[in-house]
Length: 74
Image (spheres, rainbow, N blue to C red):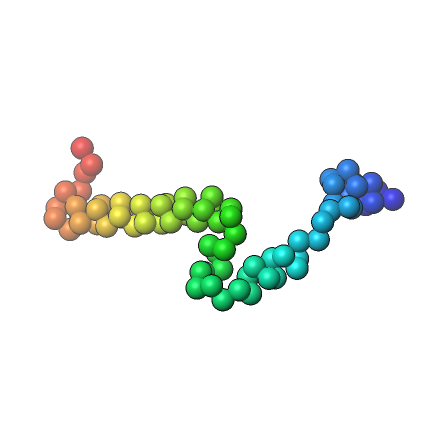
């Protein structure tokens, strides 16, 4: 009884089935990677890529400073 009530309150009982839509979307051979196919992909991918490449650049900068003998940041 509690399960049906909690799922009904969450709005999942009469929700539209989006599985066929996403199957058609992801099975298209349009040359795009899977993680760039949806309209919301940029909200996840661009901050992720900025953090990965930004931390990589910061790490390389710090490593080059240490190799050249500048161990302190001030």
